[in-house]
Amino acid sequence: MSELPQIDSDDSPWSVATIYINRASSFTSEQLEMSLWEMGAEGVITENTLITAYFKEEDISLTAKLNQFLLPYNLSATVKPVENKNWVQECSKLMESLVCDNFTVKPISTAKEAESPTPDLIQIIPGMGFGTGHHEATYGALKLMQSQILRKDKIFRVCDVGTGSGILAIGAAKYFFANVVANDIDVEALANAKENVEINGVQSLVTLTEDDFSIIEGPFDLIIANIYAEVLCQLEPNFRDKLRRNGVLILSGIMASLYPAIEECFTKSYWDFLTKDFNGDWVSIMLRKK
Image 1 (spheres, rainbow, N blue to C red):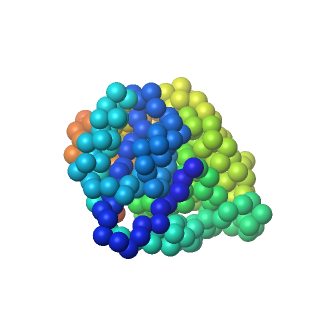
Image 2 (cartoon, rainbow, N blue to C red):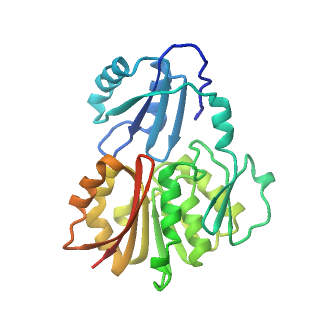
């Protein structure tokens, strides 16, 4: 289960490791979480395909230990030192409401806390992953969805690839009043998304499916994918196949250091790059299919 650590104020070094679950890996997010706890993690957070783990250990030794363990599973970890923080307080911040342009995103603990649905309110029960919009990648995708660039586009059919908590599918349904297909290969994430879709009153617009994106039937006017950059590159042919001509693609979950790889995968022969949003170490981008 996702949990943040209490980092004390002594001089002991702390490190944060980020790991992406990609399709080439035989590990599920649940299995990896359990392994990280067994390796001494003090806190683990899962959001879609991104796992963040906190260790009371120096970053250089942790990098070697984690990557040796992950290598057989086609995974790798990025490890950085972290400053001392009160992580209980940090965790509480993730349950605070935030504003993203037209939307207010309000995390809640149970469906009993839900307010009556309104067009500009997204209520989210985080479930196993936080998925509340506080992560830069999720926030960036939600922000681009409301871009002025899309004002003249006719958005009737949307696909949210790797929906997680369902926040982006719910946002698309409310903002465009569009029919949304939202998929995730994680059945627990889909159960969480179903609950969130219902408390936001968009169950007539959002269809949830465990089907792999490759077999979901297009065409779509807009596709949103907030997943690991390597997977985005692998899915590029599917995005082209399932978007209508001049359809729009929003990609997020991209570390800024991997942005050049995305530019290389999404060639100008097939795509126009419309805009991008940098937020910390993360970048979200919007493209149009030619």
